[in-house]
Amino acid sequence: MKLKDVVERLHLSVLTGQDRLDQVVTGGYASDLLSDVIANSRPNSVWVTMHIHENIVAVAVLKDLAGIIIVQGRQPAPETLQKAAKEKVVIMVSDLPAFETIGKLSPLFEGGT
Amino acid sequence: MKRVTEKTFSQSFSIVGREFFDAGKVSTEIKTMLKELGVDAGIIRRIAIAMYEAEMNVVMYATEATVTLELSPKAIRIVVDDRGPGIPDVELAMQEGYSTATTEMREMGFGAGMGLPNIKKNADHFRIDSVVGKGTRLEISISMN
Ligand SMILES: Nc1ncnc2c1ncn2[C@@H]1O[C@H](COP(=O)(O)OP(=O)(O)OP(=O)(O)O)[C@@H](O)[C@H]1O
Ligand SMILES: [Mg+2]
Image (cartoon, rainbow over all chains, first blue to last red; front, side):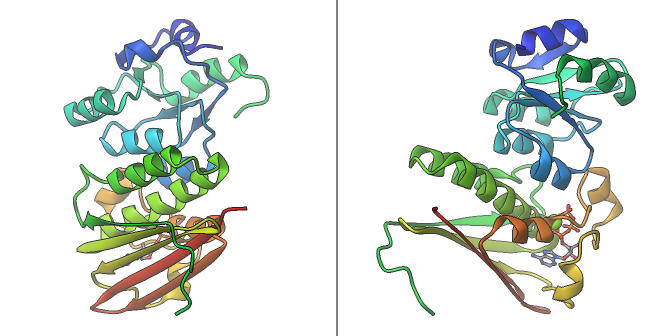
């Protein structure tokens, strides 16, 4: 599945990395503990989180994540968008809360992460 | 101390404490460098986890640190030497779930108390020495095979 298909199915708004939507996504990971995401997320997954501060960008770069989905329509801080644009990290926003966002995301991938 | 003899590469970096905007920069630089040098992807993943956690601990708890990266055909060795408060009880700090992170840090998603245990888990060799009032020295290495 390509990232653009995920964007379409979940009606996400793409805030940065619009030119990287052709990449393949293999799963997802949901957590708001950065140590958990750093330890347990898999490359090419999308990360579902509430966080909007700039530290989420380095996590996505270090783990080769396909992108970050911020839930509940929260708008990332300007520094976050700046950094994400520079590091070519795709930041997307879902208007739904985490539970519903994950509920729509997870059937797209057999076997979870 | 025993040193790697056929050392092929060594570089130093510095981390500034409390500098959350740049946090993760050194880890990212090291990851990019190892990738360019053609290091195995699985090893890079382990280094990235360990290095990120070590860097964030400096950012959260210390004043500044020097990171030394040494690459030989056999292993990657990283030393993170910080100037800071030190850790009064290292054994306690190594326990999963133990954290002295502030509310502000927890709001940013830090403070799970998973950093040090995960560094250890991802390293083949792990050593931490700390002196209260002076600082903490973390040394890890990961073998190339
Ligand atoms: N470089 C350091 N200087 C001083 N204290 C440290 C340092 N590194 C760790 N500590 C202490 O050890 C505790 C445990 O560290 P650890 O990295 O395991 O968890 P954490 O940083 O609290 O949370 P997490 O890493 O999951 O975000 C910290 O809360 C802190 O009290
Ligand atoms: Mg930590």
